[in-house]
Length: 413
Ligand code: GLV
Ligand code: MN
Ligand code: MN
Figure 1 (cartoon, rainbow, N blue to C red):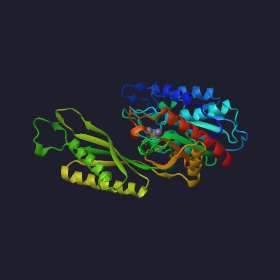
Figure 2 (figure 1 turned 90 degrees about the vertical axis):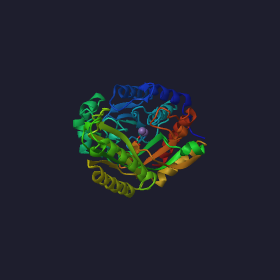
Figure 3 (figure 1 turned 180 degrees about the vertical axis):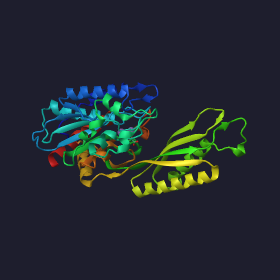
Figure 4 (figure 1 turned 45 degrees about the vertical axis):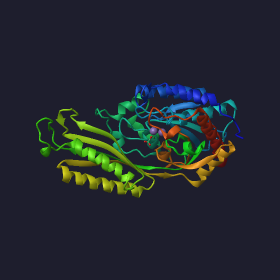
């Protein structure tokens, strides 16, 4: 039996209320630094205060709600996730982890239970990395993993990060102050939807996350020759979009047929000038490879360079491959996994081990603190889309397991 029961209707109500901020007929649009994101952040701060947390925004724009422990000399245990979304995303990715963390704090407050360690609820900013094409920005800032490229990143209109950060209460000139040193956090515990099909297919309420995938992102620019679509003979064309299309298929095959890495995706494509009667003179594609084995990602990069060289030779186009980011895969320690399993069992819930194919803030925080992650089922394994759904029962189960995990970590760490 769990020691304290979370309020199941309340966690689902807060998720619903947050899910109205940035809601559109095509999905959730709470892209980091947008007005909708700011509305979600204000809602989160309001809830944190109602839960008795003392809130602050660090210089990276992360929202941190803190509650004292009975021994304030101990490092804090942090719970959290993110409330930004991808464009046309879902209501649960990230949001569940933040709303659940607030619910855990509220439950402890209602029961007058003081943990030994101070408790922090953290809503990391810009996990998804949509606008500036740089992800895990809040958690990497906190972990001291930010790179110069992150600070200099511009959006598709050439607009920089600094003013965006100022809009949400951060300060790019003092972003280093957001860094937490190893040892400052006793642990970081994150509840998240699985975003894949495993738990849903087996009907298992709790996933004990065994590790988080690595990811390699590239931007490929193809330069051909723009010309008239009606007068240029087919044999003399250098059509950048046709070459890009061949690369899209070749990248898909790298995981699907050649099994060089676990998954490979071209997720964005641009043609210039993007007019129906002009042969595209330029095209660019954004693509990524994911695998827990970093050598598989290196092999995928090698193959990408081979197929682009082939396209240069075959199509007479110029191609530049920009290596954007490699994010290391992160194993979760057996000890932290065992704690999640024990928490599930204490709550009378079955569990199974699952590897995360999505990236998470825990991945960055793992470099400064022990981390654990709990997954709950995603109906039909869908996420980053309007159909993303986890049942109210699963959301409540995950929240209850998160509370129990916190109490176990508080005793054992
Ligand atoms: C983050 O949501 C990711 O792309 O895995
Ligand atoms: Mn996501
Ligand atoms: Mn997420």
